[in-house]
Length: 457
Image (cartoon, rainbow, N blue to C red; front, side, top):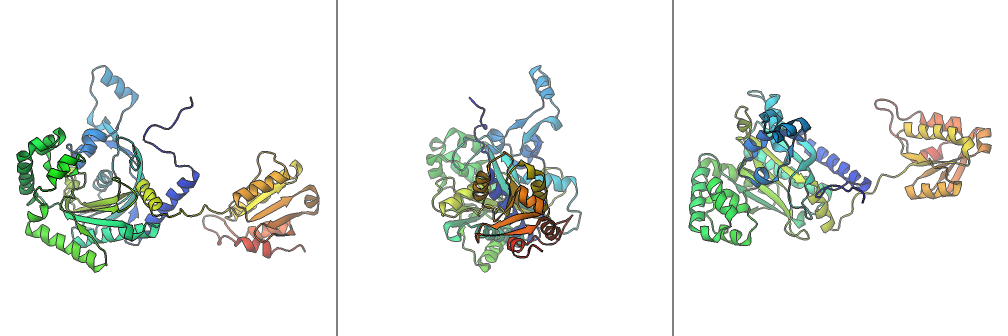
């Protein structure tokens, strides 16, 4: 049996890979309008980064991380040895911790500096049970803003995420924006104690995992998918009843900004997200129809303590991530079609092998001008070459045979208008040479100009 992709992974074949490229380009454009610049971090980090940053009690850290280990270190462990902390590595389960680590390591927010705004895109890894909308390797786009604690940053991030969803084609009316506040170090401890007391009083109704959570981090119980636990936690104390004045003011300001931007939202006091680093604002965007239980397509919040957790100065932060695969499902649920594949501008067809060298040269002239196209590389008949050109959607087909080559000409056929004309090869190449170039040449020619402006002298 032929080898297949690992369980929980998916190949992005050309059509979807092109859409993923388009998806990232739209994100870069939309978020770039708000001042976000690109950053790339490694796909694996020291395991301690995720333990300290995300939280040891989270399912992500306790159950779902993939450990990455070299053959040499694996041999040490098998022989009863130990591995240094810097060599204990894990594939990244999310993007925020790595970006914050990079900001701290490279001092991207010096004391008193303006906040840094960063956008990233790439694969994440979690050892979850594979199902529709949930894979072990999945792609995310995310943003992080570090160095500003004003509620306007939170609102700006939420607004631009909703703008992105609209731009990529997900109908606003098919989504729901949920918001909440997680409080801060001044008010959350008392709230945690209140939730723990409530869980202790209902311990006989909770699953074993939630009983464990009650001792480590009771707020994680709000994420439990067990229906019985969800029913119990529905009546647990609400964080919004325990916020300190500063957190309440911050939360109210975020809501005011959102309302001012015309965004509808739902306050959900049970929304805690799945990671321990959040403080104050948390939010999630869900699709209301067609995606079942895996309906969250993006979310995030504020994390004012994370930079300190990874060894940096106190630096407030806000960020979010959106799942590419979930967005694709949302688009499909809404009946949206992906953007059409890039059109093929030209195809060079050879009557026989004697003209192949010149045909190859013509093909390169088209490409150097910035146009997209190809030629036959398998010795097909001329009829089969035209079929291939049609399958590729070529706008122009340049046909070269021995007679044309003797005359120094090539026949250009406009496949859309069903017209053709014979043009001089030298004139064609001279025309195409006016475009392209390094590093940035003249604009790519209009494909109709290639046909319309060339005449045999």
